[in-house]
Length: 116
Length: 112
Image 1 (cartoon, chains in turn orange, cyan):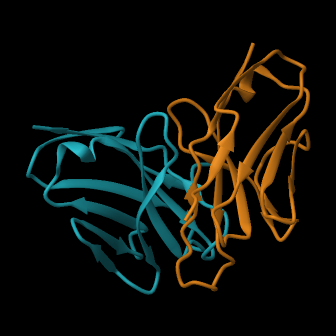
Image 2: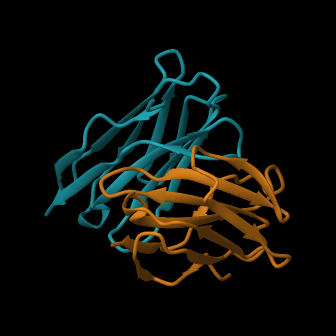
Image 3: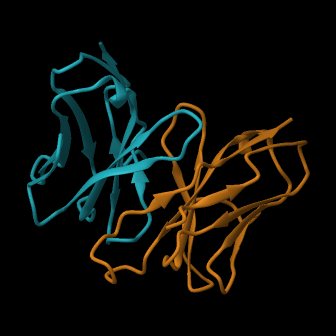
């Protein structure tokens, strides 16, 4: 069983640029959630995708957007990068709620984004 | 507005003893609670969960207790092992599979 994978591992961008982060969900999982973890804090929910549709969004501006593909992999796009966007971005996948009896989310290793 | 709080940023415990991690929440709509462990350069790893219809769930060395009236949960690790040294996050959701709201984490150091 392949776990959640994310790419790239690290990324350095400058303020104002755009970035795309990628995530492959665990086999059999059709729900993907994205989280931002700033240094010294817990992860914060950005949004969730279920069967290619956005299924909930946290308190993040519209310049944070996402996609989910038919194979359930996902992208997180951030436009007009700001210094405060520097963080670890985590992707988590889960089976559709109620289908397996286990509802925990399984996390990838994250992408460390640095904005200069 | 921090809906999930872990008031102890760090905890040091001797190998073989009990580690007790605490977590408080404010949103009474939360009905599913989880604990994750995180090593540096890795994503959080699921440890144990509990739904609001239970007050205790046990899995090996890990036990989670839920006190709904106090809006408090705790994680007990017995016995603690050096490999348990990590950052532990509690998380809550309003429905299983829904978005997770995390606490700020507690760094645990288990001394040999």
